Amino acid sequence: MSRWVGVLAVVLVIAACAPAGPVDTGDPIPSNPPGPKLTGRLLAFDQGPEAGEGRVVEVRDGATATVADGVIAADLSQDGRQLAYAREDGTLVRRDLASGAEATIPVNVLLSNDCLSWSPDGTRLAFLGRVDNALYVTTVDGVVTRVDQPKQERYVQSAEGYILPRADPAGGSVILFSVVACGRWLDDNRLVFDRVATMPGTVVVDEDEPTQQVLADTTTVAVLDPPRLVDSPGQWRLEDRCGDRVMTFVGGETSGDRYVVEPSAIGDDELGDAGWPAPGGGRLPSARAAFVDGSCDVLLLSGAAGEWHTTSRYVVDTGRTEKLRPTFDDDHNPPLLEPDSVAFNPEGTAWAVADGGALFVFDLETGGSTFASGTGKVSKVLGWLPS
Image 1 (cartoon, rainbow, N blue to C red):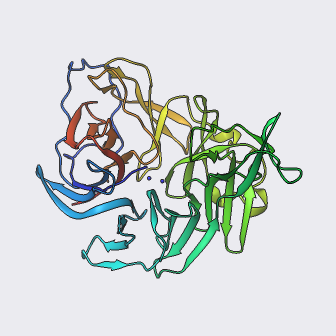
Image 2 (cartoon, rainbow, N blue to C red; image 1 turned 135 degrees about the vertical axis):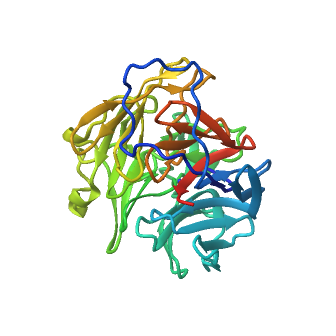
Image 3 (tube, helix red, strand yellow; image 1 turned 90 degrees about the vertical axis):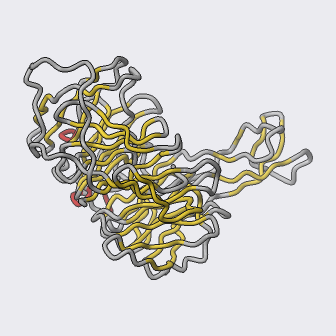
């Protein structure tokens, strides 16, 4: 389950619980319910105290060991077998988690601090270049393809503001570059990212700000083979994936709806249609949401303030919502179920979240939580593996 600079591999496990997930029976709930006992392997991402000082660490039985330092980006393959991470010096490393063997992927491109993503089949990685800010895909053998790169235009000062020049400018001018955002995999052959499809005719320029960019305004799907870029009529984002399903968010900055989509049902020629990221039958109830690894059901968490937060499981195959024990969080704010911030244990009975720079584990049976680890810089949970 592409905003981090450092990796944390935490080893946790949970006491045995019913795999289907508990239902709220109405029994009295303790004011501060117990959290889960910790066993297993939980991978997460820690930025470290300063830029470029991120670490790959493993936490086992309360002890933390550094696996790799100088890490700026990382991701775990969907099958949980391969960890990829980039170092400040530009090295991109692939680690086999079963054997511990590492190999360098020779990409010859400096990676950006916060963008690295495995394809679902574990054969390719998407990343942003640190120097040119372009979006790339590489195979595990180091065959690199540039998917898209920032556009640039010269804008001249006029009575209308800064505009594209109609002739040689008489006044001052600026050169602006567009933003290309991190890619998230729709499936093995298609990558979703935001970009500027066409540079605007007029821009607002802050003359006191030396570096300015034209922000992305278009969601694009890159088909890798055969290569083509398909722009969506409206912006949307891909928030989560589980098995063959993805979760989309369609709406504005602060409000919108989430949907469950099966990319295999969407042909390349349909990618430019307005409706497919928001299928009528795939709309989720309004709540914070994340896929439950394994079942690919959806955990729903209310965003209301207070110590207790309404929690439920949405069964995608039936459209049924099952009420669970409320989640307890004594800071009066529910945990943020953001992209890359949540992972479930293999049994689907507990979930870990990066919240407020620390790593917490919540028990679906009791609604309670356990502090797992954190330096105040934990920003991404990569996955939760068996012991």
